[in-house]
Length: 288
Image (cartoon, rainbow, N blue to C red; front, side):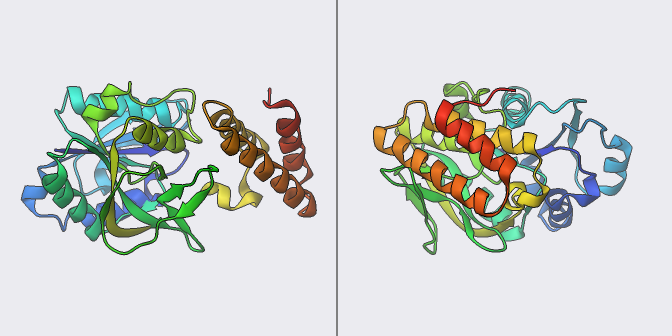
């Protein structure tokens, strides 16, 4: 039925919120539900974790795949999704990063809704509600200006409008993923989620919003810990997304947002980051 794909990068397995929470939850699942799952750990760390340590400390069976270079999310998710469908005959995949706290309600609701909604080919993704420590993160409605607005209503429902949800904890129908050629390598890390959920909308498909609420940490929330190269990657992907195939309203809104960000960064004395945004505002693309 279902494969869980966990992508790791430069983190020990015992420091991962995703692995730690799944480790506790798995032993509480019924034997019947355990049989429905295939868990794949894709480790992109330059200095990889020791596979023996994984197997010695983790309570669940898993396939461990190590790469000595960071392929990015798009390539990693595509590789593991193809493996899930072609080798393990799974119908759905759960995308996970290393920073998500899973709970039993989410795991059981995912399985329940796949069993309930699985025959409805119009539904190609299931997403929980995601919150950080300070704000509502996902899913969010995309309005006509391309701005993101919270969808924070109680309960679960089918959503047909344009939506954005984060990659991690997204549950995706593999037949649909295969039909669109899997994930877009032009967005190897940032804005892959924006691209994917816009693709669902343009293909005329629906997203099922789950009742579950999970917590997640975003690395870009703490600007003090973000390197210039990491920030450059993010804003380049953002610019690529808004510069291709968007309406004039969406593109102009992006430019206004970019200008506002420059002002905020200057006031915060983050001059290097402000300089990168100024260059994007004027030139449209950053180069190494």
